[in-house]
Length: 318
Image (tube, rainbow, N blue to C red; front, side, top):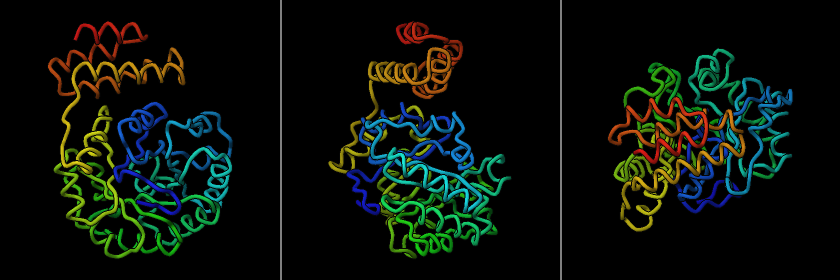
């Protein structure tokens, strides 16, 4: 498929997730066959003030590509400046606008899914981003709406197309639902029928059968995987093989899980150092081993690990 001028070989993407989709995890997902990865969402104000921690989030490596950088903003002028700066870095292949984050600290600033309540402001931000970014695709990720009384994603998708955006990702839940209940795939189908640009479906896709069902039910052009990919980069290998051969290669072996955990840890050590790296790896290691025999005990052990040797010992004792 194509999003603007960007050609993508596999229509299964890694969703942007704060604290998850950093450089290390994006590389692992790409190795497993993911078609497009997204960064953690990045603040426009952090970029414009050249905040050191924010700028670190914009440092990328070729192994991540193709890569979308996701920005969040509640102000068109700020977004124009931030998007222009990111585009000038040549650090990514696409800019994505966050209109889906439900976190209170985001929505209280009129950012993330709060924009679903203000179509005029949302449209201005989308236009500003499109004006700022000329040579790569600009897309938006949105939710079904703010709450059950305001499910306006079809209207908002029309505004995205009018603003000249190249694709729309739709999470089939309202902000009020956060991640509860079941994603509404029918609303994704309604968006697909309402616009001419590619639509990316998101929500409750964890198995090959789910993947088949969402494509058939919605007619979407691609599928975005969020929580189902936490500690599970193999989902992209499984989905890619299933799409092209109809065969699900199944779960990874215990040995492969161990190998990937250490690969992930080594990348975190390289880019985040001996103190932060192991501590960030704790949650990932817990996700990697979720559902395995003795996973509760493993979680306790991982949460006490402070160096590579600790992780090696835990894995060797599994």
